[in-house]
Image 1 (cartoon, protein in one colour):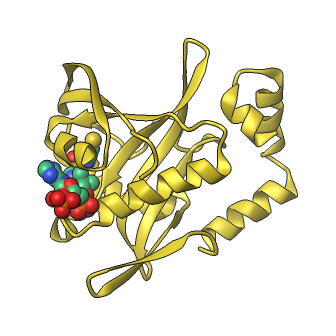
Image 2 (spheres, helix red, strand yellow):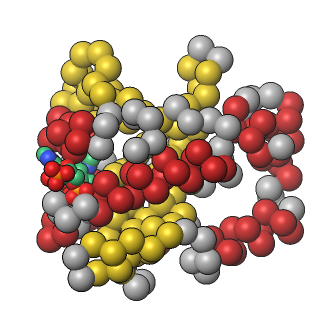
Length: 193
Ligand SMILES: CC(C)(COP(=O)(O)OP(=O)(O)OC[C@H]1O[C@@H](n2cnc3c(N)ncnc32)[C@H](O)[C@@H]1OP(=O)(O)O)[C@@H](O)C(=O)NCCC(=O)NCCS
């Protein structure tokens, strides 16, 4: 049912699924399991072993605030749909500390569903060590295992385009301005690496 709801969020079944997440004990148990960090994979980068997993938004919001929101005209750390039941938040954790984050929001265009990646961030002092790549790879594996929707895209800041290209994504279309944030370009994920 969840897979159908992700594919067709506006269908009757999609709406029914979202409604049932408000009270379903199975769904609440699953959310608790995510919170407890029982999900995910470990990855060793240099001397650190990180846990890559889905996370409640509260566990990633500080990093999003520090890296993505600070320095822009945005007035809130929250994104639309942060709390939608189809939205997924992911983090790379060094113990309790979030050292990588991103969020996936389901979008629909022309009847096709796709995941929009937002708020991709690693702390300044940890960049270039493979955290971003490890998180993207994990997310693509997780989608392959758990979602009927595989299409993945983002609106990338120009400064991050080279990163997305390194992990196999491609530009689509012209560059555009996001007022108060800067120039962006749409990027589409390649196949899972
Ligand atoms: C973009 C970002 C998430 C990348 O995270 P990261 O942990 O540094 O990425 P990785 O270390 O896994 O990098 C993977 C590869 O991309 C390269 N890379 C990473 N960021 C890059 C950048 N901004 N420009 C050029 N190359 C970059 C790395 O050097 C590495 O190359 P290699 O495979 O040849 O070694 C991080 O730089 C960041 O938080 N930037 C600020 C916020 C931002 O712009 N987010 C994206 C919003 S669209």
